[in-house]
Image: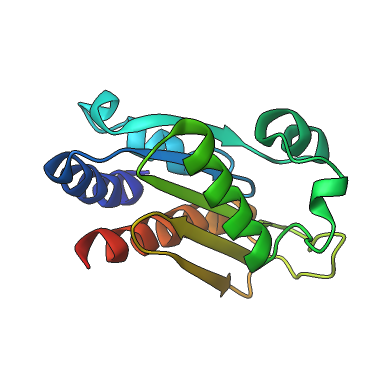
Length: 160
């Protein structure tokens, strides 16, 4: 967690310096992104909210994305990650939306993605989506790697 908080401190410093805010949707990172950002003192200056969107019910209730709204999308994909980041940004009125969705392990998901697969997206002044494949079935390690990668992706946009 210390590594994650170190990255979150860098994110926080940039958001505070820019007077900007963020909202987060995560799945296989299990809340580690939000927890890391909230571990930084002064988080209320930049963190507007977050959601762990781990199931279809969570997607429907927390994100207001119906089954009909998922036509053309599948979970654990770059388009879905972008949808989540955009939705968080819009719903919270934040400057930035950050999302992560994937398969932490020890096995893959129902869509055919192997354990260690994650897609993440940043929505804001700059947009970016990426896929990460760790090749590992270590659930806890993958959750940490996914959270770190998502925050580092955001950090590149905040530096740009």
